[in-house]
Image (cartoon, rainbow over all chains, first blue to last red; front, side):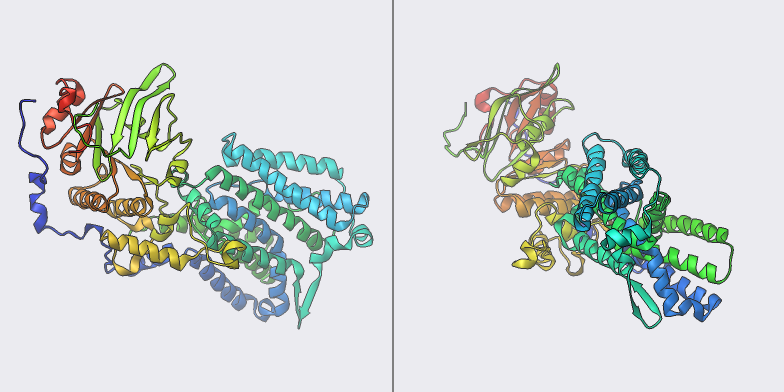
Length: 360
Length: 269
């Protein structure tokens, strides 16, 4: 080899000016920021603060409008009771939305499983605990179907669950014959199914087991999402699925487990819903899918995945409950409740978009 | 084959690797050697198959023929996760970081540490303080750390800082070697400089590196040997001390014949 040239292993000429330049590229610098930027940054780090602020503000406002009737322990416990089913569905929904998916079928799974458990226990004489377990299994199975279609067949979650929503709904109508199972029949054969309708009274407050169940569901899911590797993986997948895959997460397995768990939570909601409604009605919770999404969105969980706390969904459900209760006590027409919730959704998503634009 | 009398064994030895995609042959009986303690740059024109051969080594694609021996052991990885379990780390061009997760969470994604005892084994509880401690330690070793920031979300970091986190993650867990795919491609001049220093730091800690890059000045600065890939084959391996960048580009594009095999740098000096 003839032309041995001078070594090029020193650094490049054009880089010689670098010595005199600022070398703090890979260090972390905090700059002074204006109030708005600080608020944006704070909310970015604490996405649950938005729904908390809205919840506190709406409680104060409705308290001022409706007075002590609103603040009565009875009314506050009633709000909790009224949001418990949608709250449980919102918990299931949050899991899926955190992965940047959506589950339109959660309420359909819930009603289907309440019909299955009810048919088995009330009409076929299956022991109530077994009937409930079969319902839970059915919920997991329905979720596994969603997860399988999303990961293995690679269908978009929206389309998948739009399809399974209709399928589960039709199955439910077929099984129930579009007939309700009456409350007295449940009381006579399988009272266990209605246990979440019972309540403990503290003064004039009436706290149902269903409300307590909702809080427990949120606490358990919060633990899973924040304190286990599985939870970190759920966030990582929602954030950037490809990156999560490359970083060594088995994304398909995690996603399937998310849909299955959402199905199980919906089936637990089915048990609670029987107590809440007092009977098993094929027409109940038809709008539960959308109401659960509403609670999640108002709760500050990003529809684009990977951001937000599951507790936000609890606050989101409570905000909806507070609005409905407050406007009702203020004797405002129901249509304005719907109107207000609509604006809440739009504002919540706008705030989410704004927070996501944060820079350090 | 070798022009030296040295007897150090390569850490990666690929022989006759073939990969076909339908009627396209991406890797055509190519060889590949990486030796302990070195930075091996892999250069080649677009479509030459340089990423294919590196992917074959880390398990992202499965070769149709040929053998890959890593540390004396014949391997058939079915995925990069399997390669990772053997101590092979990859720094991807897109970094494979989750923007909303913290630096510490990102470093341990997929290999989290659980609390000791029942909390860990039954309740699967993560040992966050321990992970944060190790993450802080690893970043400090590479000079990337100032105190308060280990729980900062990765999306609030600059491009160079993110690259730093990805490299630190690889360096922290690599037991055999690290593959870096275009680590300076998305960076500015100053940030590139910082990352090049980081690459040299990692080498000085004894971890060999495969560096895929289009940037000739960067390749010539840090590489101990340069593997030139052309038409799916290892075309030549040269010593950057003895060749200029234009020679390398000429060999890479076929404008210049590769040096005879005795003058190539098939193993380290």
